[in-house]
Image (tube, rainbow, N blue to C red):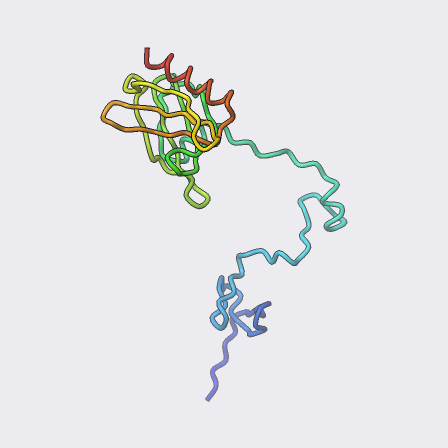
Length: 172
């Protein structure tokens, strides 16, 4: 005896099976309904004429401040702590963001689409920073109290010079 189900359904665009309207994932093929199909044309907000009209609309770019990005990574800055240096860099073989504030040096490693704190030290514990060349690449070697060493690569020479000056000024 078949049971009647009055709940609304929708058709899966991947396997054409009927699934419940409230489903976020197809129980037959695993298609996720919350994902946007990259092949489908999208209408942009404010566009009445579809894709082409949406391309002609200027949208205000979304900007994230360094303070917001640092906070999202779980690092708390004091209200009077200023970010003095903020660059994407490669530190000890890991990609991320190198940050120098008035009082601290830290590195936020990029993990997927997020950042996590990998290194943090007060500037007074920075013992030295010197620029060197190895295998044709310029890098900055930073020595900290406790034997920690950071090798910063992937920055222009001018950025490395600025970073070294910031570290020396903060350590004094």
